[in-house]
Length: 323
Ligand SMILES: NC(=O)c1ccc[n+]([C@@H]2O[C@H](COP(=O)([O-])OP(=O)(O)OC[C@H]3O[C@@H](n4cnc5c(N)ncnc54)[C@H](OP(=O)(O)O)[C@@H]3O)[C@@H](O)[C@H]2O)c1
Image (cartoon, rainbow, N blue to C red; front, side, top):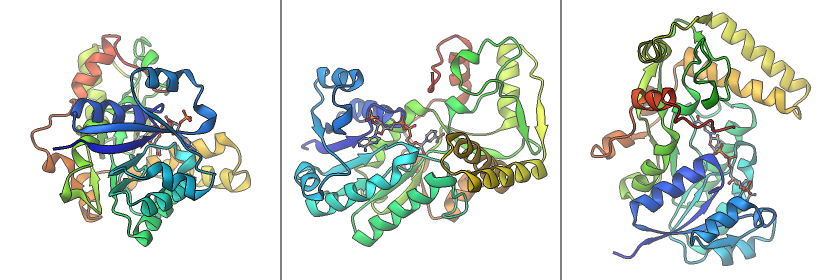
């Protein structure tokens, strides 16, 4: 079987790097990378090129015809563009349709949540706009959501020994009663799932969710305490506090939507509301929205268990994604 020709946007980013690694490990893909003109000279891009990956330079703000030419001949386009640039995918999708690309995987890779409900400030709304556009175009698509990254889902310890591996210090909050479970995926496994999903006929024009583990905060804190031998001093927030934090964040964002601080605070507040109050990010939430389960589709693939990830972090082998 000849390899699937894939063009990947975002290989220098977190999700994109995982996808690049997953596609490479899979071996059935011939991979080329889409890079914007302003990033061609970046060391990260040069490293990828030196590793033999063909670089296609394209401008999502440029003429669509140039992109159509660039995309011609690809079976698959995968986008892992950052949360704030989602709408730039509209031009990419238009060009992909005109170029006859067989499948477009837009940048989902977030928690499971009903359309419009999470809004998640600009990111969620704009992801939905892109999905809507793909459907209007009748461009074959697959939307993949991964729950929350393991790398953002563990508590910190009184000794400070895991602080090096997280941007969230301290992180000792238990939301509500701490019993809401959430879909969690190791960032490094996203690409392994994507490599399986991307060429599967069963996932064409479907939403798919992945997870390595389904855990509540109580379970995660308990695991961390048991492995580390430390006692975490928990801070509890009630449903009411989660709701008023979301309202405050929404008000601040309405007053100044250009402030990155306001935007980030709104993201966090809306994620907390969706994950711990509405309990959207669960297999039941996903299946109610018509998602397929990647764990059911690929029972032979064993993703990293959260407990093994935690052991790595405690062994000093974690990586802070936002270092
Ligand atoms: N589930 C979770 O827990 C979780 C956590 C974080 C993020 N996410 C989701 O994951 C998605 C990806 O986020 P990320 O953190 O992986 O992104 P990221 O690390 O910021 O990387 C974004 C990538 O997009 C590229 N890019 C941006 N604009 C471009 C353009 N105009 N043309 C070509 N390339 C462009 C960047 O390339 P350059 O090198 O040119 O900058 C970079 O490679 C987001 O939509 C977010 O919602 C989910």
